[in-house]
Image (cartoon, rainbow, N blue to C red):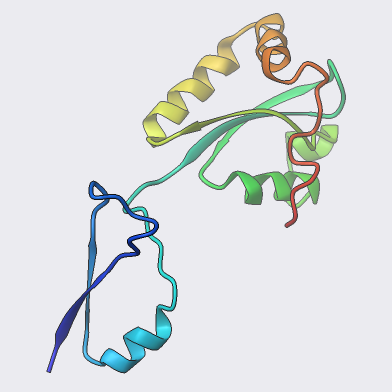
Length: 138
């Protein structure tokens, strides 16, 4: 017999949060598998980011759906190309977007800016050009 279970956590979800329905056949397995289940729906995150090698150094602007993974790839020099060739591994700025089209549009916009505008953008949020991913654990 097939049962349907609603997975929610009243401590985490508000009345406006959608409830996710999971069809299953075995009530014991669903109870054992989901001791704690948290889901925010079909919400994606996209990032536009700026890397450098030093304060006022070479700049790279990129876009990704997983900022931690992408910064790790840059730091570990896993991807051949511009960032590896110039040693760009310091994350000095990023913006988050829900929709990929918005992130792509912003990336293209920033790439068309002159250098001083990019520097001003970085320094408005990160005056000392600190590596924002310095303490991240990968």
